[in-house]
Length: 299
Image 1: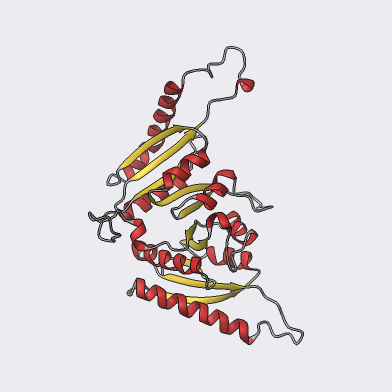
Image 2 (image 1 turned 45 degrees about the vertical axis):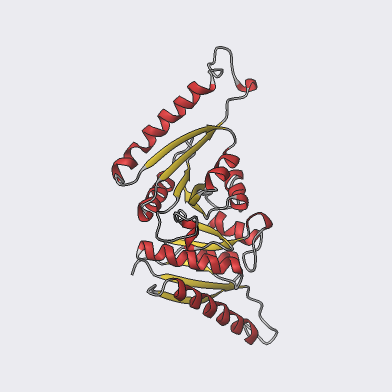
């Protein structure tokens, strides 16, 4: 059986939106969906690992999420499970068996339910599989262009998939994830790289760091074209738009994601993973990007 798409659910509006998004993605990828509810293990004095109330709440959360998923995607192959925490470790362990892990996000105001603060950051910092963050209120129509009358529709084409590409460290895993996401949607892939001119302080005598911005942009664009050439050949049906912009990567990607169906960024894995670290760019887009954000780990 192919690895499932896993959605972490905790009863919040964010996690229910994540479960629906995960169901649509599982259908696109022809994979089963698994709903996972993680709760911290607090043994009672008599050794009972969980109270009846905890088990009842977990069953209710999974049942409600399952009902919502079946309404959105009636034909989806679905199962669910309860896993004991700590929540970060439980979700990271579940993700190891997944094609991807999908969780809910409140964005700027933080994370909710079992995915609170350090838990959510810990999951994305330690997971070995891609993690997708979905905001509350995300609907199927948000992935598509509006209809001619301006109303939401799922019959129109998909909005762009945006790839935030670090040309200083272009990683195959991140690029492939973005191309595959665009292929599955029949969407255009917009590849974005933001660059900043070098500081005068770091330039040595005779260095050519003072070339004008147009020339520097052309150099970055040429390098991007070379990096993407092999992927264009592998995915000939995907339309690719290449963009290089002078500015901060965080603000550039947040703007690019405003009209996208999905934003894809990378995260370098640490071995061993001594601490939860996701980098300032990824941290910023998780808090501010309006589109779902896929964080793809790479060596």
